[in-house]
Length: 486
Image (cartoon, rainbow, N blue to C red):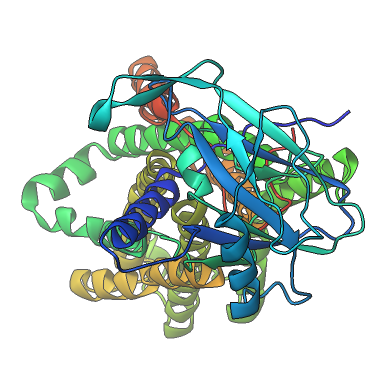
């Protein structure tokens, strides 16, 4: 049995394409275009015997129009949109088109001059008149089946942009419910990946590396020295709650939708990819620490030569300082690079609320982590750096989050790749929360009041992330065959 499943499209992507559609529609009205079609697209349907064309009413229960003329024909082998192909589509749509109600088969036109076209009749009733006329939906979704047996490539020419008729469901789906995206489009679509927002998020994370500057103020320096346990417990518990909530409420569940079950990917394979990416993320910080320790060596406390100086702090040797600084700064560089990878993936393919939520979770744990890094770098027994030098080096190592964002946005990840990145990122978050943040809470929360304070901050951190579920949309990216299949 064929199943048609809803795939929520990212708001920025859909809005951008709608604006593009309106712009070209305006051009046609003003006489800047004379094509009989507003939109054309080519699709690779090799090894697919049946696809489904759909249209949906908007959130208010109206269709943009009562009908839409369309013609589907044999496409070019390279899925290009040539002038000859566009001319055939235009000539077809200039003729009389056969009305086609939902539920009927939508044929691929192969014979005739011009090729026969069809008018898709949407299940709606016209209300009002003139500019105020609206087509009120009698059914919110209309579907036509297309038999693609014997075709490797098809070209579609339509009176309207098909995304005008999308609400939650992509306009062309395969037999497994997967989205089938166009290879080429007319007019050419430019997908918005929110570079500005993603880079802005990266800069916010980078600013967190300067959190140590607060300890230059006497009041905070005194707070840290006199209430170290309280500061550590509150910061670590809040970060742990936010990280675990981001992993369980959003990233892991979202990844199961993006690493979809398709005709080419069984349920076992999808589960294997999801689980393996998560486990790899969980062990990555451990592997990274092992590699760094192997390269720079493990720092050991300096031995005191004077027995009478037992109560004095030893002065670290130059080699030990180098090992500590290399371990902290190199580890922070690679850690932030990974953060940039899944922040970039979120802004590339997820809705705005989820992208900023992942950024917020990153910021929460970065604040706790960067405070720890700063204290290590300035500790006379470890890094022994001056405060401003520590801040500067920490900021430079934190710039890798920007590199990670740019790498992912430039790579244009598919749904599958985005799902793997989200699962990997969730694994990293689980590891940080379970082996870094919570152990600090257990170590420093030695009284009942500290334990209750830690629990309260954990709940606040988790709630701050969980609130995004009130207005959450699934991620969705480029690339056919990677839709929601679970």
